[in-house]
Amino acid sequence: MEEYIKMLSEKLAKFSEETRNEILEDYKEHFQEGRAAGIPDEQIIADLGDIDEMVAGIIETPAVKETVTPEVEDNLLRPETVSTAAADNCSTIVVNGTTPGSIGYSAAIQVFPSNDGSIHAEYTREIITENSPKFGITVKNNSGVYAVDFVIEEMPEPQSKGLLARLFNNHFSLGVKDTGTIKVYVPQNFPVLTVKNSSGCTAVQGICVGSLSVSSSSGSNACDKIKANDVAIASSSGCNALSSISASMLAVQSSSGSSNVQSCLANSFGARSSSGSNIVMNVTASECTIISSSGGANAENITAHNITLTTSSGSSHLNGRANNINITSSSGGVNAHIEDHFSCINVKSGSGSINLSGYDVAHSVHNIFHGSGGVSVQAGEGEKLSSVVNINCGSGHISITE
Amino acid sequence: MNIQFKKGALEVCVLSQLYSADKYGYELTEKISTEMDIATGTLYPILKKLKEDDYVTTYLVESESGPARKYYKLTEKGKERRRELLDEWNEFVKAVERIIQ
Image 1 (tube, helix red, strand yellow):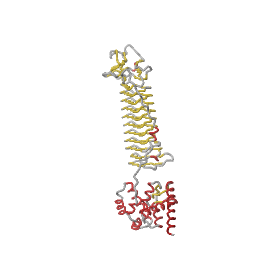
Image 2 (tube, rainbow over the protein chains, first blue to last red):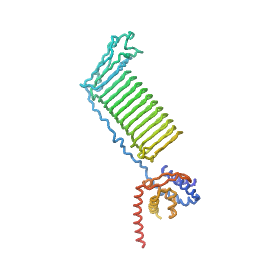
Image 3 (tube, chains in turn orange, red):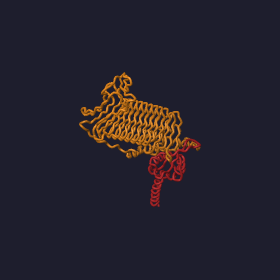
Image 4 (cartoon, rainbow over the protein chains, first blue to last red):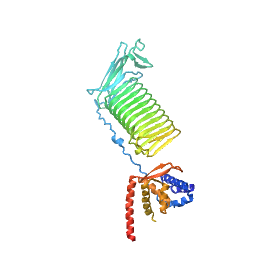
């Protein structure tokens, strides 16, 4: 039998590996059954007949992968494009809470739409003492850029007793008792709005703009009810909170702070964090990319054409629907509940465990699961794991439930 | 016998055998080769083609005596195909009978 199978394998060399393996498996099974029925190999071989005649009967249909209707994509809501108009020959507004040089403020900056289409700003302080520094706000039209700057008009002696504003390592910071808020009002549909802050918190609300960029070093960023073509939110140690944002490109980034995103619509959505976690809920996007290194990624109710979820040591949790899903985790676990309409799922985990549940595999083309921490796959009720499922599991336990 | 002709005849035989009950490969070759002098090997490419054309599906059943058995099951499309082929076959047989009488 072995010799015969070897010869058959050579005769089948011109066919695809899939076809070759299928025929070889059929023949092996045939031999086993024949032997079990007490028929000698020679007789089985004689009955099988001329190999060349059999080989001539193999018709290979080119593998046509059924194209999955991208229902997710078709059903996606699309963010509307924002038409913008410059004013006073300016196309950019820069709200700068980080002072030039070495002095930084901790005041909170809030940006709102203005009623009359002009740019103006006000600074409210909760406590003013005679030792408080005096602040001024200037709005300048500087060759196409409206610069909203906060300047110290008068600064008391740093060593003064009872000083509420202190000088630390050349960093000027408002004292806790001298908390104030800078409110900036900007016109709607302006082409570019940039807000920078150092340790104070920044909030942007109800703005319709061409391109929005918000960045802070240790302060947190909060953006709510934004409509824009491009939105980029970044914080180093502060947290980011985004809600109700519609944008073609939406990017949120933090290094040690966490990002929390809720109810957003984008063509391209990206959340990146190094040690902070990413929490993303109710996001619809054509491309949805969430990358966390040591922080975990929690993605709930995501609808996208492509979902990419990458973590290194943090764990991944996904509940969503997409045509293509890629989840990669090096040591963190993966927990995914995937609803219908997908064509491709790739899940990789180094040492973490993988749990997948609740999806309709009838439409799937490839499912590749890999993990040494164990793999558990549970199809939705009444669904069958009938399509191509490749499970590669190092040392953990594999459990499959239909 | 002409290979194409034999293949057509074998196809309707296989479909009809599966119509009564699901069968595994060896069982099918046994059923057919006891009645007909054929090279049993030729059935496997036919089964493969039937599967590709969605006339049959396969499923594995663990066997007590040896390796898992690949069972072939007729699909609704396969049942329709069998009906068509049977009609063609009957037409052909009637025509041959008329000619040779």
